[in-house]
Amino acid sequence: MFVSPWASSFSTSDSFLTELSAILLHYGLIAGALGALAVPGLVRGRKGRWLTVFGVLATALGLLNVSGAVRDDWWRMVTGQQLPLDAAVRISDTVDGSAFMPLWSGTEIFAFLGLLALSAGLARAEVVGWWLTAIYLAAFVGMMFIPVSMTYVVGTVFALLFLPLGVAGVRIFQRARAAA
Image (cartoon, rainbow, N blue to C red):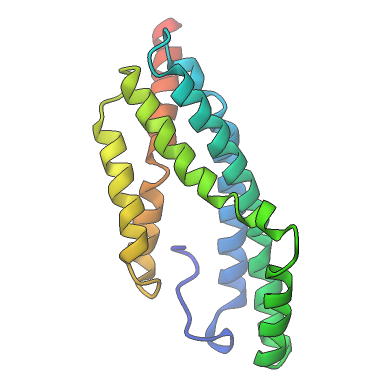
């Protein structure tokens, strides 16, 4: 989001920056999904375990599906550049209206709910404080109200949505170092 600033139309967007943004989002989401799988190892005992495991599974499913959906950036960009706008919109709407599309794109919410459950589970297990859940909720609410044209603000708030994974990663490295 930092790499590809918001553009008012396809003709004013920078194809290279849009592609760079898409590839960074794609691999970042895959790394986040895979990294999330290590998080349950932080929970000692039963308190918070099931909430953390649910959060991890929902996060991984949501992030992996969103990473695949990032491919939409390419085809929508090229379609918008190569075809008249009404034809590009018709194609886009047809793809979005496909019968199985909700099974793919409809799972995005799992990533958000999963990260919320993951941070609440870690707080319940006393791995982190409840501050992490509070920051996550504030960022989630912020994403609903910040205009997309405020690219850098949106990018910063969007990055805060991944704070639970970052904090968990730091805790994993701290435990590994302490054990060594």
